[in-house]
Every structure is written in structure tokens, then in C-alpha cells.
Image 1 (cartoon, rainbow, N blue to C red):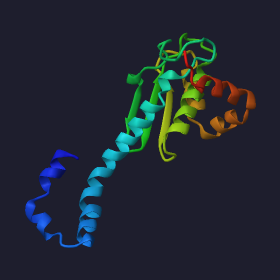
Image 2: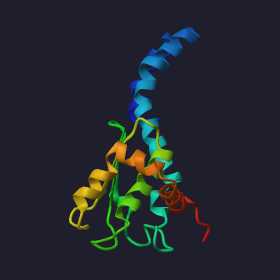
Image 3: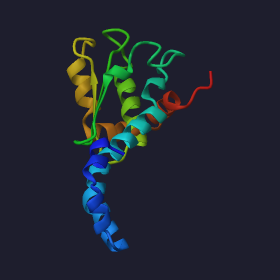
Image 4: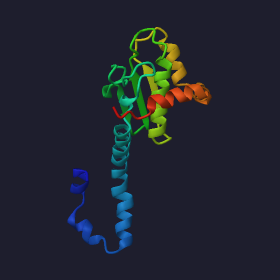
Length: 167
């Protein structure tokens, strides 16, 4: 429990709570609004930690994106108040042909892990890809992402990258 929440409850407040209805009213009006943002932050952090995007496999190499230094935990920003997640990744080479697929894998992993109301922003790190603007536009356009996921070959590739490895 938050320290300031505990400090704000006075002994006189407790003695005024005579019935279960009084207790429920205080819980709903005082305690819940203070704990809900904390619970959401813990939940989202837990989802990201339980389903780490750094463990996604590279589509061309037998290594994870983290092992190839394409993604790191520092490149993941979470703003729970705005229900927003930003992931910035660095392709292995400036002309990486798989940059869009890597970004799609990141987006699908987050889509499958986070509550649906979260907005996701997947970006190529500035100056790390020859067609950075085009890749960023594709990865953050809902219609393009939906169309890409309708392609069974592309979806199989994404699923293969997201499959857990037991190595």
C-alpha cells in the first residue's frame, strides 16, 4: 500500500465507519482511485516482463533481437497514464530488408500482450535505416498492419519469430 495513503487514514476516520456500506463507500471513493493507477502500472509492467519483446527471434538469424542489439529494455517507454507504449529498435544494418518485419513482430507481440486500449508506437531509431520514414509510416498505419497480418506467409514468419525458444 502507498505510504501516503496509509498516512492519510486517521484513527478517527476508522471509528466513523460503522457499517459495511460505510467501509465500501470509503474504499470506492478514497482507496480505489489512488490504487488503480498503481495497479495498472504493475499490470502493464508485468505483461511486458512476462512476455518480453527482447526475446523475439530475428527473422533471418538464429538469435534474439536483444542478442543482435536490435532492441533493449531501455528502448521501451511505457506511459500508463496515457495508455501508451513506444518501442524504438535499431536494425542491424542501414539497408536491413527485414526492418518492417521486425517492427511488425514487435507490434504483434505488444498487441497480444497488452490491453486493447493501449496505443503503440513502433519506431526505427533515428538515422539507423535508409528508409526510416517509410518503415515508421508502415508500422504505425493500422490499415497497413491489418493488411500485412492478412498475408498468411507473413503471419507465419511473425509467429515463428514470436515462438518461444527453449535454447
